[in-house]
Image (cartoon, helix red, strand yellow):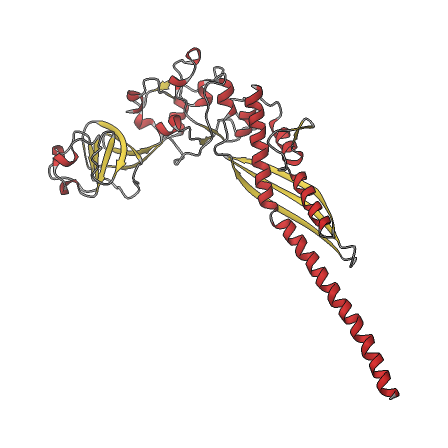
Length: 383
């Protein structure tokens, strides 16, 4: 009996601590999981904070009608604190890095933990119409029940698109009467030569690519493998014809054509430009009708545009679009390069003005300066 009692006491002494350790281990695991979850959406938070900061600064410039003096510092303050010069900035509510810090810490407190987050470093860089941002935080999670503590340094990166945000430079320079929103062009230059034909007319032409016979043929270019598969009456009303195969009767279908060219890169709806034997894909009209932007080496960056600068402050590649000069206020209309920052810059010399085949014929105000004709390799399209 005595031996049995001793064994029972021993069993109770072992099982008690074992149960407590299991409970503690489970809570410690939950604490670690909580910290992982709290940091898992930090990159998404960073992306939202970056876009909100940029949009809020842009709205401030547009609303006040005054450029920023230190756009990089203003962006940093809005990104971290949601403020401008220490005052709350409209549009950044609950979206700054510190807002995220406070929100996560409150959730931790509600779950019975103590969480401290320290912002150790942050940065952002311009990349065309994207802002590449990053931050590093040092976190300490403490569990007052188990006295467990977790220390972690976490770094996050994000790429934030600025598409659909208003371009403040054009708004300011046009006295608020011409609005352009950022959108990335499909091409890296206004026009790219894709092929040269073996048979061609002497004319130039421009239109939207159509790869199937369409009843509405005006301002369209019919693109086909072999034009000899069709009757002339089926295609004669197109603006022009492009065929991969040469034709036995090239002049019988249309006055404007290029045959014997590569068509594999042409997609339905592409804007095609025929210039003698050359076939081009272009975004000339998209640039001033839809305000798409592309990178150039002397243009202002998105932060420069917040400061109303016409050249890059850091000598970095910036972005540009074409202006529809006819839509500017009458007092701002003049004969100048349609390249936006060149048009408004009277103090720099970008060379003579050039008319572009088909484009300047349809839009009498359209010109491109020597510098950008050379930069974009458009010499063959100069009239």
